[in-house]
Length: 400
Image (cartoon, rainbow, N blue to C red; front, side, top):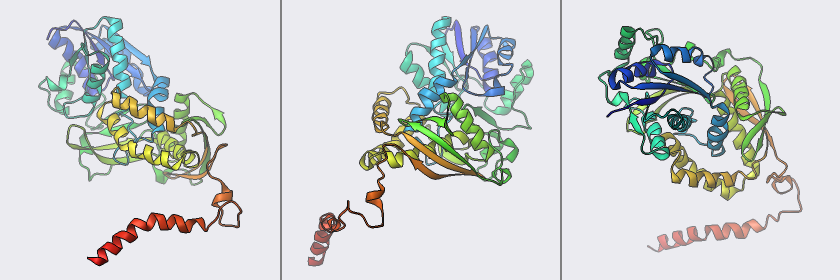
């Protein structure tokens, strides 16, 4: 395959640092290094200079923080998306945005190819390339991990050392990480043993729950149509709100998850995650939903969550089925406006209050005290009709 110019999704980590040089050596092409600013903070420091020093003809860092939270994180959290009961999809939901911007930069730079650092064993290769296909089916795609003969992290480290490329993965930090405003993920290296407890020093966004403050902290999150808009009465932009929730949750050691998950390609893998702000946001959202969403609407929406979450995890963000599900889910959020009160304490987030102007919770109906709006006798016929099929089945069974 002849290539003139490649836009590389570049993080400055081990894989993409080596891929940049490998693309130049293998394809004799120009490489534009593109990094999406999704809230990696200090990880972006010096990234442009490093890419240029490694051989890139141009390095572009694009601030996508607000778009990421507003158009990707918030829609997923309106759906209460969660994969296999634990994973809040922090890496999964970022990939379609990175790939979307990568395609845009390829158009702007006149590039005929794109490249990524995902391995042939992982999910990210699928997420990147399904997005490429959806947004520019004619673009050339280079996936070095499926082409080169560098088959291990150690081989990559040796390649980097031979060419003088500085990389963050060392014997002292034998794992890889991925960070954005929603979470940090850790995998590989010493974490490949699912019996081995993660080193407490590894974590970045949260303190050890045992070391968190001895006094709980109570916060309030305001929601409008399913989206968080304010904390303790102060309104924030989407990115700033999530950053503030990260600070609050991290301070109390909230949001750590250690799980073995089922990859789309078929194998299981161990991942460790920190999602402090997302954990608070999800708890608050569900609390407001509990008093504003109709029962049958909620049950139907809940039945869609596993499929919706798999679509994100498996890379189908730009699929027609995702558009259908998102439209349906967003309709369920029309009345999800209210406030949740949360108590944060040593790794736990507990809902201790919820309120809404249009709450479906009516004390006059729910009270255990005397009321004049509900006739308890009505329950007799309700139970009889719902139990009729059970009585008939039992009678027929006795006859046989």
